[in-house]
View (cartoon, rainbow, N blue to C red):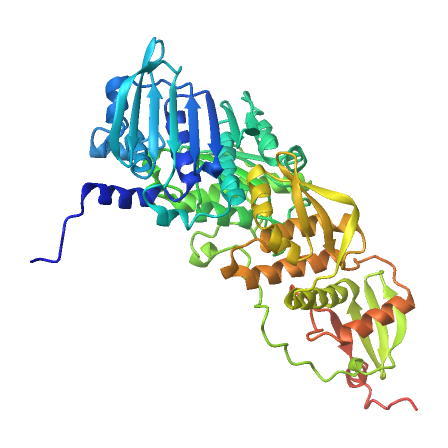
Length: 582
């Protein structure tokens, strides 16, 4: 007997479905894209049980007749292609039949549809990939698809889903991305009987900005910089944070290619290259980048979910995004750029794409920070470790000067206190007992619904870090406690954003994420440059710095001090020796 067997059809269909249907949000993405392909101007979504019990998507698109309703559930059935060559010019999202076949294989699915103008419709019910009912039905004015009991016949898949709050956040993210890609379409999302999202149609030249304001929240969208460019190969429109309003989170970044929400390494690297002169490692832009290109220049089949895309000429895309955003950011900073006739202005030399140098394509995302558990670096034998420092004063209210055993010690007051607070806060985190203070007035943070849901899904981990959060309205959270390293609640908002981004990462990345988030929180709490300090405060800061495991730099790697001992001073002044003062 041979050991190679052909799988039964129902087993093969469930395995194939697993490549596309990972969670309720995967189903919603496929169904929403089908609705948009059908020309819908209104898409209404309802979910129960975070999409496990029910996902209902209704649209006012072109609809289907009885024969198409039946054929749509067949494997490899599609209205999009007729030959292999059509794959190179495909301008729609996907194959209607492929999505329904995969979804119906792991759920109980009902499709009701009718062509526009028809007085009657058709209802087809499929359970676990097997047809159950095919009957006449009232015309729904488009298409309605109900997906019930997702993964009922593959219970092992249910174990890998996250909490209801997290899964609801994923559903919201699908609608947010579809809404940004299609400003002229009305989207609504009702969850557990309550409307949580409503995006009204937006038209005209400001449609993208209007929709970005709806999705990101008016506070985050206000002041976004507009960038655009167009060439025979690529059309670009983008909204991005001005250089002086970067955030502590990467969550508010959306890339849309031919109306498809995607991830693209070339676009992400170009985004960070444009911001290179204006940001440091813990700051990130909010961005909505919309690209349009010919389908034959794009490969969307890198992954079965079509989430990741690859461009035929990634260098052209990188160049276009970098140039357009660089120009817009420089203009926002009031830095003039030159144009020569119809030629697009060159970005600064530090931003210019060096096509002849492959290393210009290196990853531009900030490198991961040093691991939390690393050994403290050896401390140099410096006299500033000894007691008896004499405070001399401040330079530009930023640097503290001390005389220490005949030498001079200069301390960056912000970097020094940042290191002190970082080590104190990190020690509290590792001990499991973070000192907190309750805010007299809770801090309200407006986020996209998907980001708010993600934060609430991890509220226990945030509480361990000193942040107690609760839901507030449809698209926000309210922070009621913060780590006591903050002297004022007003310092907390950016640290809250960074905590939401870093401390809510999967546990496999917890060490690096916690280090990065903790460093930023300490940075926000530390005394700033140009803050006046008294002699007592300056000496207290130096004493605290002495107690640090690594006092030589701030958590981000900037030096916290510069010292000139007696011998170095003598050498600088060309004196023969350094005689101690008696």
